[in-house]
Length: 155
Image 1 (cartoon, rainbow, N blue to C red):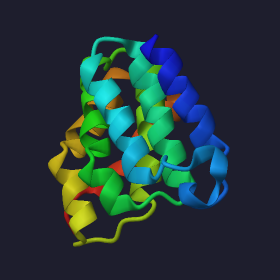
Image 2 (cartoon, rainbow, N blue to C red):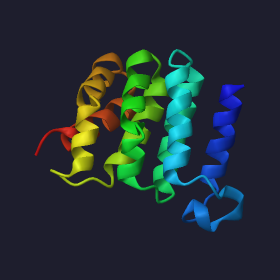
Image 3 (tube, rainbow, N blue to C red):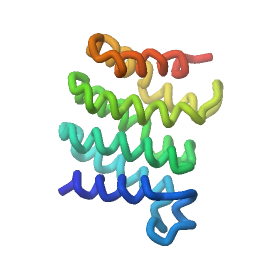
C-alpha cells in the first residue's frame, strides 16, 4: 500500500514541467511537500527495500523538476537516502537508486555552501565508501559512488 502511494507521487512528480504550483495536476506537490511525504514514508518503512528504492527515485525526480535544494535537504532527503543505503547496503538496486538521488542533490551544491554542509552532515561520504566496499563487481554502481565521493568531501 505504501509503495503504491510512493509510486503515485513519483509518477506525478516525474510528469511535472516546471514548478508544481504552475501545473493543476500537481498543485500542492511543491518540492518541500513532496519531499516530506517521501521522507516520512522512507522513515516509516526503513526495512522495506522497495519503499527505499522508490523513495530515492522520487527524490531524484523532485530535484530534476527544479526542486529547491535547501528545502529538499531541510526536509531530510540526504539523511533518508543515507539511511536507505545503510539499511540495504547489500541491495544493489537500492544503492543504485540512492546514488542517483545523491547525484541529483549534489548537482546543485557549491563548496562551503550550507547545502554542502547538510549533505556532509548526513553521513554521505561514509555511505558512498560503504557502497564501494560492498559492490566492487557492480561496475556502474561502483563508478557512480566513486565519482560522488570527491564532491562530498570538505573543500
